Length: 211
Image 1 (cartoon, rainbow, N blue to C red):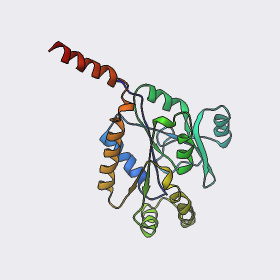
Image 2 (cartoon, rainbow, N blue to C red; image 1 turned 120 degrees about the horizontal axis):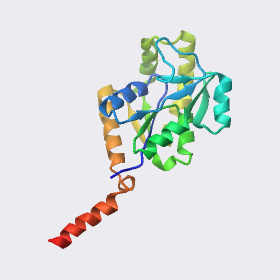
Image 3 (cartoon, one colour; image 1 turned 30 degrees about the vertical axis):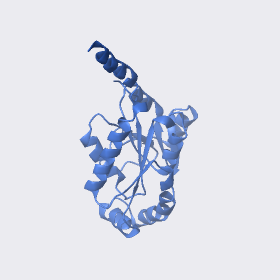
Image 4 (cartoon, rainbow, N blue to C red; image 1 turned 90 degrees about the vertical axis):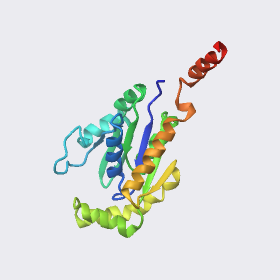
């Protein structure tokens, strides 16, 4: 039974673990398509264009927005981020779910778009603010100044948890991963997401009539 693909949104404050959980979910189900965002920020060491992000100049990014080629976009810490629309729509039509690792602003735009009925949104919370800061420092990717900015912004990010369908507190990454899998399997099994169910049940009834 062919179904339309889902848009699975993962959001959290920086350091709460959404990227780690996204990678684990992709390993568990290789049919998931990861949405590669476009950004105007500079690549970090080891990042490749078209893999982690599509790295764009600000002018090129703004041209894509003006042409309606972005499903969502936002400015975060002075850089633009957004989701190219074409690959997402192609995956949906092919019955493939797309996983989004985006902030609350991007999630909000997608939930308000024409694709809203296909969205499953999940917010990841840290067990504590102290734990959140420790995770940011442990990964050693940002300066003290950037970490301070991320911590300051985390209060605003966390305040949007109530806009999401599901909330997971990431006390333990294995337990959080198990919750994510359960949510995805349940959403895929919803009756309104299985367009072939009516025909399938009619076939079952035909078997009853033939007995």
